[in-house]
Image (cartoon, rainbow, N blue to C red; front, top):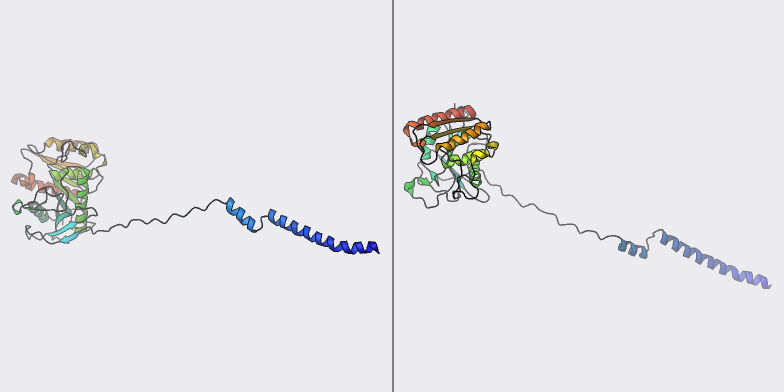
Amino acid sequence: MADTTVRRTSSPLRSLLRALVIAVALVVIASACGGGGTGDANRTNKAAPPRPTAAPPTTQAPTTTLPAVAAVPRPDIAPDEGYSWFVHPSVGEPRVLLAVRRSSQPKRHPAVLLADSSGGLNLDYLPFADDLLARGFDVAVGCLYNAPEPLAPETRRVPCVSAPQFDGAVDSMVGTLDELVDATYGALGSSTPLAVMGFSRGAGIAALRATRSRREPVVLASGRYEGWGATPGGPGVVNTADLVGGWRAPALIVHGTIDAAVPVAQSMTLESALRAAGVSVDSHYYEGSGHNLAGEPGVREDLENRTAQFLCAHLVCPA
């Protein structure tokens, strides 16, 4: 009787002990296998590196789109000769002034931009432009910079009030001439065959622009190409003949042999440098002529003829 009682009493106890052992074993196994208990979550959070905070998206600054050219009324002092007047606005200024007149000939014809370097827009450029117009060219006259002093009507110059002051044949002036070229394309059409013609300062700036691989043919009259800045020897002054490695456009160089303002040797030096660089160059030196070639009756017609022949060879011939 005694033995039987003991066995009955201990059997439930062994079952309870066995259940406890199994439960503990399951907990240990679950813990070892990375089960999803609270302790595991805490341990995972401590071990994982902090997630980097995403940077806010960057936005590109909006760009301002400006028209290539904007029409303006004819200036009061300008004659009513069929010219249309425009300005070329840019993001940081300047606004360069442009007078444009189209040939009446119906066929496609080239255009000539006369880059005025008088300080303002010199109305005396318009008669020379008219002579080119009569030969079948579209013409544009634009001011590169403004005069430092107020202009009176008797000066026959139209103020370019937002244009820069003259810096010399330096990069800042190249940017202004680029705006005049853009304005001309805007007024006449982007496919217009265009050449740039400069006198004196304008020739120096047109030549420097040509060293920047611009494609428009250039006509350079009485230009100064060496060491020219608003302050002689100041910063930014360049010698154009040293930069012809980037020159791609054909050039016509003309100069008077007794030019008292700019020695003819400057044109000769530039011509030699261009020929050595393999650039297509035409030239003519007017014996006994001074600085203002377009103002000399015996020279002006020949200058127009040479200009027309040069443009016909390198652009298209007027109808």
